[in-house]
Length: 149
Image 1 (spheres, rainbow, N blue to C red):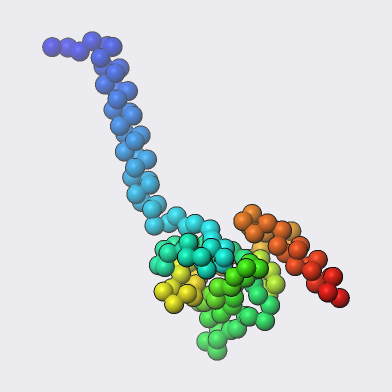
Image 2 (cartoon, rainbow, N blue to C red; image 1 turned 90 degrees about the vertical axis):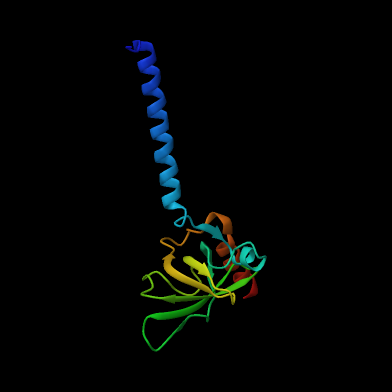
């Protein structure tokens, strides 16, 4: 028995839809461990970030908090958002733009003790740059320092 052209087209359309759905599911399954959600130190303090889950931590590098270990590759610092502080441990070479008092986004995971272990550090590229979740915190801090003088 030979199928009519109308039925052949219907079968081809259904097979194409199944193939697209299968490809989307495979892509989502393959990338499930690569998704990193953005959190501020206040979110971490509130318990919104789960330990051992890939996240991005964004905020300001607290002044006076950057410590470099004698091994030359380990850097410890504190990320602050004005409400909470999170200690960060990073093993690697920090970007040239990384400095105290500047914006930073650290990619990694929260250790059970509360320290954020970063795999990657993204430093701000412009003085006006700030992660959207932090709003205009840098400008507010500069204005407060100006008023204190």
